[in-house]
Amino acid sequence: MKVKRNLVTSVEKLVRCLASNLYIGKSIFCYDSVDSTNNVAHRFARDDAQSGTVILAEFQTTGRGRNARKWVAQKGENITASVILRPTMPLENLTYLSLLTALSVAQAIEDVVGQRAEIKWPNDVLIRRKKVAGVLVETSARASAVDYVVIGIGLNVNQVQFPDDLAEHATSLFLETGNTHDQTTLFVSLMKYLDANYARLVSGDTESIRKMWSGYCNMFGKHITFYQGDSKREGIALDIDDRGFLKVKIDQREEVLSQAEIQTIRY
Ligand code: BT5
Image: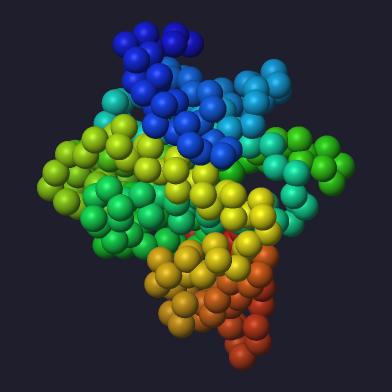
């Protein structure tokens, strides 16, 4: 794993741009190529890296999604980053981390690119129904105490083409706007929103996160299909509750579903 020398000046710039952040971006590491920025973040966290450390890479050889799925992004065209946090809040509030990260991505896109994005529960960011970003939150906990959390973010910025198996469902900011976008500006904005939203979570203000998140979610009131384990189910998405779980009306009954139990939602 080689540190990308020619990004060192821009790392310094990034640290400067994020100096007013309370939590995120105090130290930043940039690489040419890694297996997965989340893997690097886990290694750093186990070696006592401070909370707020950010890992960036131009390329990942084995980028990961949830449940062993793959994240595939062309070298140098996209944001692939991970953030190490050491939250001291109750474990149940951590559900909010993936919600607030998706929210931060949507806010940064809107702010920098002027493009409205949509969040699909729990944490996919879509433009015109295609996925432009994904979030992977991994927690390391001992007993009921959180040791550290890694937040991984993949945002497709300037990628022009996707492999055949992704093309139908994936998009980039370039493909949606017809313009290339400055990755540094986007990244700084994303880290600022993430910092501000994380500060809300630290102060216990999950309600404002829930409200802002809901403003980007078009799922509510819609018929959804999803997989729960191996069974395919359907219902009407109603809302998220104060823990960030999805409320779904199924056969006239209301069920509350966690991120861990639902996969592949369509609506
Ligand atoms: C996610 O998983 O969407 C979380 C993706 C997180 C990626 C970041 S990159 C930095 C950090 N380091 C890592 O190794 N990972 C994180 P999931 O909801 O499971 O979606 C994965 C699915 O998205 C795949 O099975 C594909 O169908 C699709 N996919 C893969 N690459 C994509 C891309 N570049 N754009 C859009 N969709 C993609």
